[in-house]
Length: 86
Image (cartoon, rainbow, N blue to C red):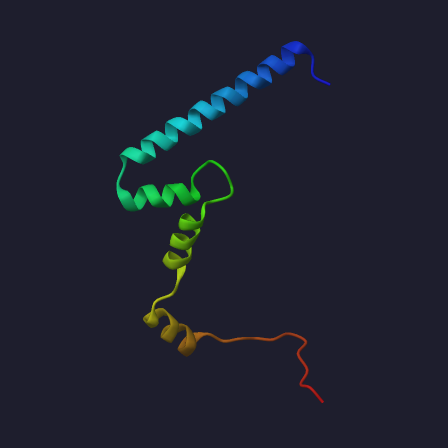
């Protein structure tokens, strides 16, 4: 159990972290559009994102047609301990 002095120090540390997070967020708002969106996805802050941010991340991570063709041509799938069905 924390004593009052320890609890006060813990509260002060939490406030500093919150201030730092809000300062980083305001700096991200002033930067470029694409980078700002990326910072919103990977920066410090809550681990849950809203629906629009999740949809942006999904669309950004989709492979292009060229990447899919390269993967189909070069990818080797190795199955360990695989046995055909009887």
